[in-house]
Amino acid sequence: MLYKLIKQIFFSEKPKLTASRVIQPTVDKETILTKTSAFEQLEKKVKAIGHSQYPFLNKTYSPSSRVPVTDFSGFIKSRLKSGDEKSILMLMRKIIEANPGVGLGIGADKYSDYSWTDGLVKEINSIDFNKYIEYSDASACWDIKALWIIASKSGGGREFWITEKENFNSIFAAAMTGYNHKLTAEFPKLVQSANSFIRKMRKDDIPYWQEYPLFKQIEEPELISSLNETRACFLNLSIGARIVLCSAIRKISGNLADCSTYSQRNMGINADQVAKELYDSKLIKGVKETLTVPEPQWEFITKAQMTEFCIANNIEFKKSWNKNKIFKTIQQMSPQLADDLIKDLPKIHEIFWFEIAPEYKKELNALTVFTEKLLPVYQVLCFIELSHFS
Image (cartoon, rainbow, N blue to C red; front, side, top):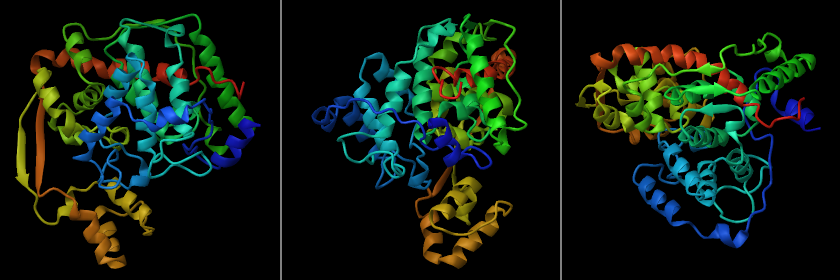
């Protein structure tokens, strides 16, 4: 029944990530009403940088898109390690606050009863990754759990993370490239589960899955990171900084802000927020340059931000349009909306020039290849403890 429901709701062409599997935990109403000290401290920090109404969300995107204002993976990781699951439940409710979904329990703005994100947090927290992968560092399990929890804000089953649209697994793989991975004897069973799911999608004539390739069994059970001299430095970086660094390695040099993809920002990972951390690590070299923003200011808005704005305000546009045409359409629709789009833009523009440190370039460049090797591992891991399609 659950599979049929997922199919009916989500799969006409490509899968759309919306909450589909809701696990209702037992929640103590009186306990959840009281904010933890860790959550209160986090709340104070984000109020200065977040959306005016939804401070846990990025103010340059529509609140309905659930884009976090910053990378919360470090906070989640520390709370997991200390056994403070409640603070994470509160955080995730805030992230979906502006768009809690339809028929998915209460909104995130009231700390009472049940939110669908509660069940997903508890599910991920209970997973034993060591059953499938022996990592070279115990911290790795906390890293991947933190990333999975943030990714769960989109709702939907983890099995749909193998699609290209959200690019979650590329992000996971990049964050984990500093660890050695040894696949256990249980891992091949996950490959079988993934392939069972794809075959089921094909059998039910779901168009997107007809050409989607089956996974091959991974022949190398031991996947050794390319990092040696820089391993400790890489793993000491925040999870978000590691991910931005992997993007920067592909670009070699330029403006670090250009290395931050929408998929990363959708997880709360912003290049400008980790630039100083990366400079201090000595893995990259560079300087920050501050420029006055010239007119038109909208040049410094990404096309993705513009289209998000149009969707949120019911403005019709075509994906093929460039930013200039989209902005003129917004102006014609409503000069006030056009002003709203740019009113919160900074009056200065920061450029974070960088180049990969020459002494580490060879070792870091090898991360790109290792990330690609890890990608199918993290795609297959999405099928941990998922059996409704088997």
